Image (cartoon, rainbow, N blue to C red; front, top):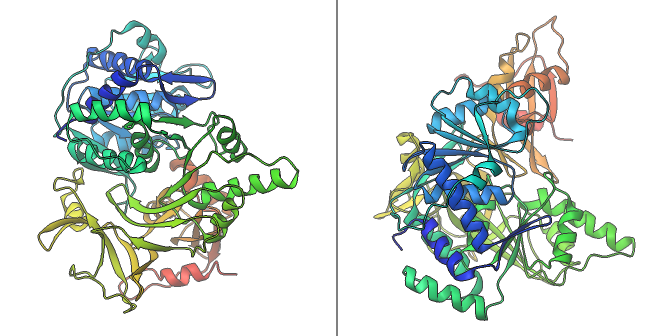
Length: 540
């Protein structure tokens, strides 16, 4: 369908009316109200000088306002810039500068960091803030408008047809160091969202707006539509795409009230609403949830998860042990998917109660492949390590990085594929064994940490002679950041010294959780670090 996704959501909103679209805490937004608030926000941004093709940064915590803002940005035919709310000043400034953002919609709690970054970003001419700064004085007084106030004053922007050629951006750490924007056409985003949503309910995908209207009306009347609790942050692809897939079929998305992961809150929401679908990110979310369920059951107060039909995880290792523990408390389908912001899905593992699951074992999705460096398929059972590849839309690319785009988005056998660098082998029976990412990206609880970025910060300490940052296995988060540091004779450093330096410049999740000091780091004659040796330092 050659449309902007905002136009499709306007059709769904017109049909769904006051049916619930999104829930957070005590607030329930019906479809009509959600769309109108987004339209008011779009009008405000337009009146403030934001034009089609501009980029609007969103530095909000997960919640209803995040969805409203994304919809407003799409209505204006602009591109969102998803901001990690854990960024420090330098990281935020670099992202907004690289993206060429002209506006920022932010949470008041982020005021100190945002104010420092914006002081050196004159191109960001519009700032909208949700809530107040954490403490006075207000460094953005006179520059930031109040979110709820402007929504109460602005007139809604009317529905409109928009182009499927409009840009959709999703910034990812990827394998490129600083975050890179993966640029899609809206027409390709629409295809992905429609296939995801309609595939979930087993219905035919509509091919135009008239069919969408008819299909939405039929689903609302006849289908048992999902109530989807989205736990991952909306700033990441897993969260926002799961949200889109639910909304496009007229379903309801649910967000936690707490800003940090509270597994008891998750279990309570499933029980009380009730929730049919749960979106998580691997063991980082599933293991604490299993712990909470076990504790409640042991105390004689088990949570009622009988409504739960499906649990979806994308992006981080979800171990067989934790899947088994969850299935003791619910009879749901567990969907473990390999995908990336660049594209996919590449592979899937589906587990039901009573079935045996094996960690990191998957089935390739249709049209996905495991290839060698020359683009040839890996022979099943050969033991050869290859790269995951999946069909990609023609125009998908990294923003402003043609070299990396050419390396990741490849033409193979006359078709365009995305090859983000995930390593895998194929067993003789066709089972895919995921080995990890080819590169120095550490995936810790769904957050991507580029090892060399952390090394650069640590190496800037005057008493550090050499440093190597690696990811080491972690039961909950998949991996955690660790650093081996060489210190010159006569110098003394403590782990707290290193962490203080990293925290001053980078987000907390990039901070090394384990640090070992050594006299010297082994390097190859070409100066390359011995990563295998560095990881062995942390083996117990």
